[in-house]
Amino acid sequence: LPPLIAILGRPNVGKSTLFNRLLGNREAIVEDRPGVTRDRHYGRGTHGRYHFRLVDTGGIVFRDDHPLGAAIQKQALFALEEADALIYTMDGIEGYNPIDQDVIDFVRASGKPAVFVVNKIDGVNAEARLMDFYQHGVSPLIGISAAHGRNINEVLTPFIPLM
Ligand code: GDP
Ligand code: MG
Image (tube, rainbow, N blue to C red; front, side, top):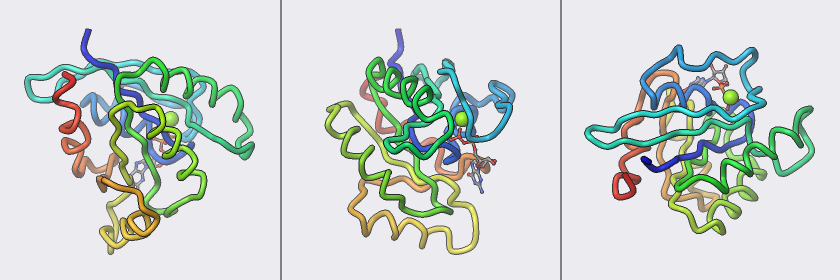
């Protein structure tokens, strides 16, 4: 079976948009509302000649700040445990969020191969938005736009040795 890569991140950072983009199928999953994914969604994709599996989660929340927090977090933690590798997604428009640090520490502690991506890098002064994250010591970082398809291949390339 190809390696399973889990997409983690707070609600509304663009996980489902990235999931669909990485699978090359915008119609794959349609959420009733952005930011709300109650169940885990799975897909299979290719990166060049390599194959991978992907799981989209409702969002990892380490503080009680989301109406569906507990149920969604359970899904995310299950995905984190079953995955071979992790993509931790953050929001470049909103900027660095202290909750991100908790989860980044957790992702690192898992010992699984991980990439950290800052999504929504698609506006004016987009690159400057990355500085906020670098200054908080989040690295290596990949700035992407899931909505516009920017830098998407760079997200998967670090995982090729697993594929
Ligand atoms: P999720 O809750 O993490 O799964 O996030 P969604 O994929 O549902 O996206 C949340 C919101 O962010 C939606 O309104 C998306 O259209 C928007 N969004 C996702 N990716 C991007 C992006 O690359 N740029 C911008 N500007 N908005 C995005
Ligand atoms: Mg979602």
